[in-house]
Image 1: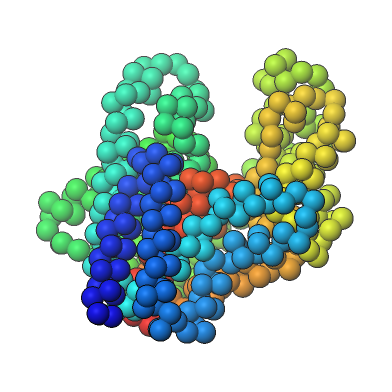
Image 2: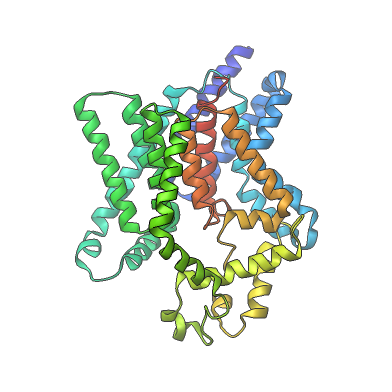
Length: 412
């Protein structure tokens, strides 16, 4: 009976994970429904059979992999805005729930073959989505005189997905295709198809113009390629160190200019109504104010932060108090635009260090062929975006962090 229950759980779990790999084209309600079904199934299996095999090691794995949710739950001791905090915890719940469902599987069950199936499904879904967008907006992309930012805005509105998240999904499709290129069929036709797919995905990153996902893809792609070519980790780190040094010499002036723009928060936003001043306001101008307010708030409560429910409220108070001469920050609501700042504001330096320690443990516990490039891509994007504060980012991260960690685990 125990073996049959385990077999049913494993088969149902794999089917649901395959279904969830279609998330780029599924409605958000379907994402949530699938996560709920996976969670209920995992809890039932745990009560029936899984608790017999649950260990302290699995508990540590669960706390580490779901650390962001755990940190946010811990930050609720600030009860000023419990409802807002509870909503954020519910939104980030998949980061904790999906690893729980994987930890109940037989350690040998989730293997590279199942990972390949899921990645093939994910790549196919991304290709179908981008092909649909290409056909639907062909004239706008190639024959209109509007800017790339306007093209991106039109696409975002049509599919109700922010361009950064869409770019992030495409970026990982590039990495997945490269990994499969080395791990599967070596026929010339299959290789040609995969190379063309990577070029097509990279082309779409160019169309969408999301700078950080494109930069993250470049870094992660280089790491993965060198790793697949069996270059040692020490040599990879040496190559990246040399590239970083060279890049610093070549691009230090433009980077310095961008830093100066971000530091110029006092003159960043012109006074008056946004409808009159918006042509003078750049993305860097807005971020300069956001990062200024975030830094001021961190200085006031650096140890334990404000609690996840109070972060945006505290930022808004700063906007209203110091930048009340513009209606920009009342017409639009801006989060911290950095996941690291978000954690720092929510749980202080204690929470941020706990989260970074968790990431270190993931790397230590796992093999690194595809997992490290995934983490490089994601955590570079976290520098300038709250990827794990929105549904689309949470689903992407929790899904791939689970399947990659458990298929590239040293214990498998």
